[in-house]
Length: 406
Ligand code: UDP
Image 1 (spheres, rainbow, N blue to C red):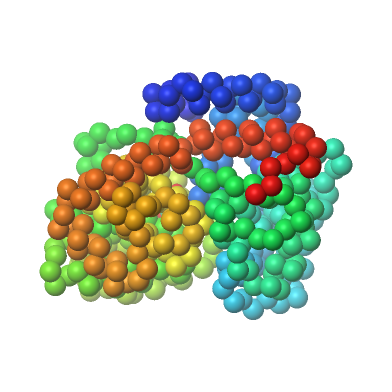
Image 2 (image 1 turned 120 degrees about the horizontal axis):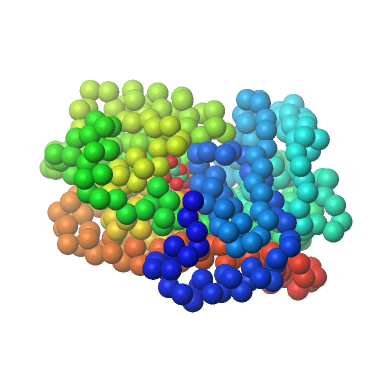
């Protein structure tokens, strides 16, 4: 497990000292993170790395996962899509399933802590049992700016019981009666997903996965989810085909809290049928080294999402110095400065155009990747994220009216 000291060469000494100084002021406090899945998806990814580092700094930090049946996760998936702004049919029974599951968790989960960081909507209602002297923060990882009213009306009273709400980007926020804090997410440069790999290691992994490297690889790595627009990616790629030799690689897996995944995967396989230049690969959620190697072996990384939270796949690819073509949605616009640290697109045609341009202009593509890596080093590494959480916890210990209001 990585220790803080190991980050020195990547981030320099100043941030390390800052982290130790902040942690000293929090000694003796206990923290609890709760989310909805232990593996798969960006939130689990971050917690897997962040929690051990907090403990390394001497802060007693635990991580719990809310437990629920298929019905609960089907309901929370609908809520998730509704909060993103997609119209969903919500039945009275759905609210009941949500409440009952949260209540069951409340009776089974150990909720002992000074500071709570509750991630996303699945465990949001746990706050109904808060004790007076604990501090509760709701960490919203999605774009909440245009929620379906009915679902938001149901969740909002819970959210406004929190001491503060954390968003990943200013444009994701909502009007709330509680203070709001901006904390972008991050990646861990030392994790298996992101650490440096030898070229021989990369080749070995690609061989094992049966991914040919004889032609440039254009890759999108994402859960099989309609909001990641895998069919749009196929269409965009097929647009380059008369003129360019390349392969499209669609890599995904389905997170434990995403029941739609299998269906979307089938649709993608069906659409790719008969086109030998398209590879569709489903990987288990623990395939961190594999994802790392695939990103490194790729010529171009795509992220053609229709909606996006922050878009960690973009951060990961930029950190590896890859040219990224991604939709200008969600947190992606924070990461990609168009034609400087990557390419922002708004359509299938635009994606086709830029894949062609970058294949034609490898020097320009390389420069985009280099700029992207520096942008991530300065803004989106785990150590900066850790510092922001420590600052938030420190504020949480102070009086409510001392919170920074954004
Ligand atoms: N990921 C993975 N396997 C997959 C697809 C995605 O490990 O088959 C990882 C990906 O590398 C990234 C995270 O899951 O770390 C996805 O985070 P992102 O913010 O891009 O999207 P989310 O899935 O949270 O909507």
